[in-house]
Image: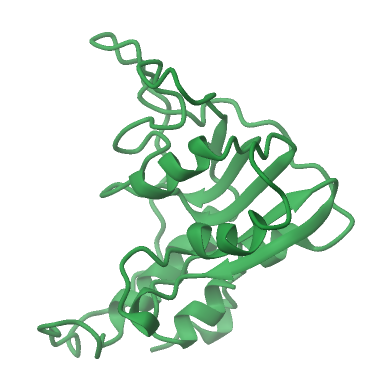
Length: 202
């Protein structure tokens, strides 16, 4: 799904929601396509899920290439998602630990918290994002010239968890991820599309 988003000139984020080992919805970013900033992959998939599976979705797991943003993390908490696995962190808008911990914030007492773990296919998710940001975005209001940019192949190490003594909200929510369960369908590969190293020349 993320590769499909990249080919459509969207930020390459794709996701799959899984219940009882079966994919119940897949989606990708469509913000540029529809000129709607709320059409993130997670919300696009939820539009298909909620008419069939009413909330709470405590038995549903989300697999997504990039940490959900604050908006999506909040929506996931409101619908009672069971758990989230993501590829790379979102240092600008992350809602599951990179910026804020919407998924675990104890001050939000009206919705049950959910666990979120990052790092699954992290390198592939980062390379997809780099490939997107190397290309010209014709949908941007003032596109920046990127002809002189160089695609970097070195991936920084995964940040380690840190304790946040100034707040009761943990600074990272992905400290000890459990192993992924083997689903009946290829959910992991659909949720976190693997970038083909041979196709990374730009």
